[in-house]
Image 1 (tube, rainbow, N blue to C red):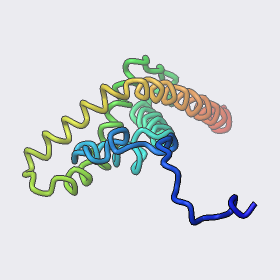
Image 2 (spheres, rainbow, N blue to C red):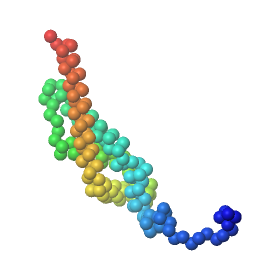
Image 3 (cartoon, rainbow, N blue to C red):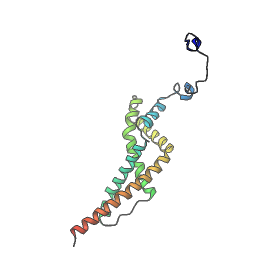
Image 4 (cartoon, rainbow, N blue to C red):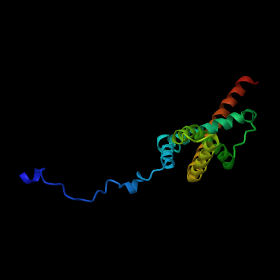
Length: 167
């Protein structure tokens, strides 16, 4: 029993540290400013997080309603196709991306001039656009669903107002 709790023995040479990744596996020694920046964009700022994408979908639905409100009031409203809404979502994603990413790029690369900064942001946009096509599609569908819900609610309210104020 005394040997069981004796801490004076040297530690066993056990190379089985399966719970811990080596530097090669984590890439910590090889992280470039681009990798660090990409990590910040995705992790810390939640750019492609569920909350961010839901916010983009809601914003797109609101923007579409604002632009087509007159049609909605006169019962001429037509829902956009998935491709049309995808363009709205992509535009909002780019605006949101620029809002969050430009300051990160400026911090990561303080020596860039304006044109180099624009090129770097454009390069990152294209990279994330390609990598996150799935999020774009799901956000587009969420925007269409949000739009349907909001339009139905508005149409009910408009009908109630018409009944109330017309003979």
